[in-house]
Length: 304
Image (cartoon, rainbow, N blue to C red; front, top):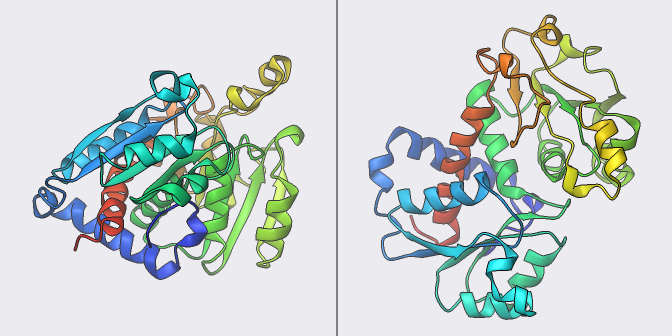
């Protein structure tokens, strides 16, 4: 594996290996503290990000490496009209590996064609976010102890949510996975995901717009925000942004070992009163994200 653009590029065995290394890092961080000494990671974020960018930077620093890069297209030569290809070829002269986020779908794939160093897709438009998916898989593995025999509720923006699309694509490869897809009609899961991913793999799924209807069946509830930046029309966003707010009342029928996840940032789709519930895993998810990115950097740099 030279790059990571799409979660589908990883086999189940490769995912298992990454999870195993991430868990080992969690157990014995000191063993890994100089693995990337004298290595440099460039974070090229053509679209704003707090968590993903800082997670990558923190991961590299904890491996003993260094970080350079930019956090918006305006602070790069793209603002002067430079092409993505030229930026990548230039930055590749200064670093050993690149983590790249871009608003255009497919931009990181284009980058791999010109890059002399490994590229990690840190999110491209509404398309893919493979390291968030690896974070989610590590979270599920640690919190539930398994990646099979799960009923997963996905709630909120299922149309534009790249984290949702990537997670479904990853989870359908495990045994006995069922999905409950909870969204307003305007933000339903795209047809191509239903046809090419769910139905093609004979995955059982239910579509509903009621968050409480199947709450007692869920092992995992994955909440997402309605993403203002993906809407063409402010009125639609305002009408839909508070469609689901998870609070204590809505969790009354939920299992005691439910795992509540969210890729963050949250706006108000999870009430802060849920934060103290032992089932809330979304801040743990942030920590898991750092460890899985450490494992991925080591793998792409071929460091044992």
